[in-house]
Length: 381
Image (cartoon, rainbow, N blue to C red; front, side):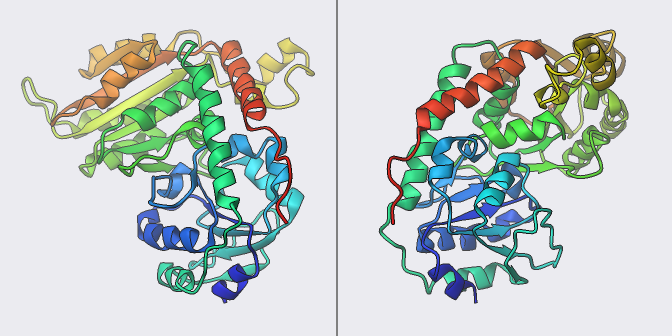
C-alpha cells in the first residue's frame, strides 16, 4: 500500500518526529528517501538528523517553512514517522497545503492534532524498506531544490551567529558541532528543544537526542539526564534557568551516584548547560508581547529570579564538589563540550543570555533566512 501511495505523488517529504528507537528506522527511511526522491525533514529527537549518502536531510526546515519559498514549493504528499514534530511552522505548512498524508504508526498512537492523516499504516521499518525497493526516483529536481534552499538558510544563520555574542541559537548550534561521538544530548522543553530543532545540524556521527515532550513541562529534566548518564552514556543536558531551578534535585541524584573517592569523580559523565535569560522568556516570542502592557506582561508571564544561575551553580559546586564554568563564547563552549575522557563527573556550564538581544537575534535570523532562500521562481509541473 505504501509503495502505490508514494508512486502517485512525486513531490513529497518524509517527516521524522520524536523516536527513542530512531536508529532502527535509519536504513529504511534513507532507502525510501533515495528511491522516492524526497527530502527528509527530521527533528533531532527522531535520531534521524544525520548525514546519509544521497539523502537530502534538511537541518533548517523550521526556518525554511516560514518563508515564501516554502509556500511556492508545496508538497503533494507527506510521509510521517514518529511522534508529533516539535516545529510549529512545519505543522502550519502542512495545514495550509493539505497534502496527502501517510502516517507510519506501528504502535497505533495516532498523534495527529491537525487531523491531517489520510492514510494510517501500522507497519515497521522492514515494510518501509520493501516499499522503497519498488520505487523509481523521479528526475524532477525536487529534493535538490530543498538541498539548495537549506544550504542558503545555513549560510544566512552562520552569517548572523558568527558575528555576534553567544546567545541561545548559538548554543544549540554548537552542541551539534562539539559533542563527541557516543554522547547523548538531553533537551529541556520550552525554548531549548525548539532551538535545537532549528539550529542543530546533521552530522556523520549520530548524536542521540532526547526530550521529555508533553505534559512534563520543564520538570525533571536534569533527573532524566542523570539517569541516562548513570547508565554509562556520557550525557549533556541543555536547560534554561527555570528548568535548572525546578530540578536541582537531579544534581543531588548525580551527587549521590558519584562514589566518594579521594581525588576521583566516579564513572558518571554529566554536563549541564544552563542558558540563563532571566526567568524564562518563551512567552515573549508570542504575539501578545508588545501588545500587552509591559509591566503586566513581565508580572504574569515571566519569572525573573533574584540571583543568576551562575551564582547558584557556583554555590552548589562548592557544596557538592562538581565543576562549574561560567562562559560567554562559542570557543569556550566548544573547548568544554569537546573535551573527552573517563571519569569526568558532573559539570555545570552557565551562559548569561540577554533576553532582548536573544529575541531580536531570533527574528533577524528568520528574516535573513527569508531573504537568502527567496521565493521559488517557477513551480515545476
